[in-house]
Length: 393
Image 1: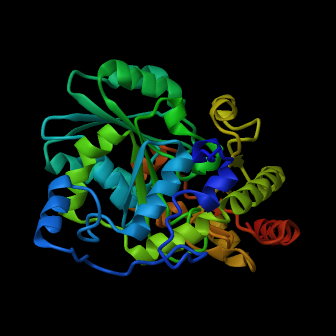
Image 2: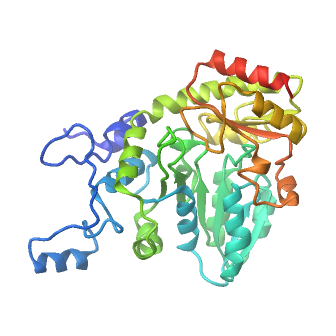
Image 3: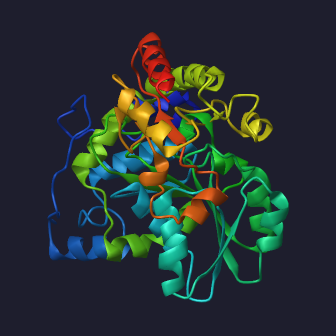
């Protein structure tokens, strides 16, 4: 009997999914660094353009990017996937394809800074109405829906304090209201949370993070039903051109081969470092979804199988936070996450800098907050580095 890839374990999907070898039967996926393609005849060219499938121009589709899309769709359990040039391109397209002037969006307040910029600065320019709610408060979600609500944006766990939203409950409310739900699943990764299984309509990723996993390329992805991809996103992607380069797609394909190993190791270390931070005398509070003291711990364990590689903690002031960051000797100061190298950052002056002080206060991003993305270094080394740095707070 032929193997059904849908029945494979995630670790197998990450290595074998979407593999499309050329006639040379190469072991590694081929990179098709080409802008366009040739045809046997004018009639064959006409037929491909008429069908709207196949490969005619790499802005539309490319064999290497298609392998990446097919592999990620298999892992996510989605009917279809389209790649983009970055995670923010994925967010932008995911919302733009669903909305027109006069439509209404509901989103959680706790979002990555660029996502807040899209909702607060970009959306109003095009006549879109936006309501922001406290993500964990289901009553606020329910009360926010209007007859013209067309889209919901959920980031869970949210950047940077790992706030968790009940995805199943909010998506059910969205469906009842006739809105399409979009979930940014980058912190959880496809290994620890499956939003489509929880009722989401669309899932987005910054593949720049864990999927590449080594800080090499920018990439993004949108996953959904074939109908939504075809009706809402296909032409938008085709004609506006936020396409992923074949080389970046290939890098992500190679990154996916070790995703299971990397993320599970990072997850284990992150849990241990969250406990270390929470117990330190200089730390006011620590945030990690799998800790029992996390505000949404019960929801996290219901919908996630792991807490992920990111934690956050508060040391009281900007001065204290900067002293901690400057004292780190192994962990780098950097605004990325999901890297094999451990990275720490001060969100108020970096990732969430575009938000006003009032907006940051609204979602708990204080001047003393530090976000830590845990990598693959030895846990004893990371523990010593973090403990020593916290002593300087």
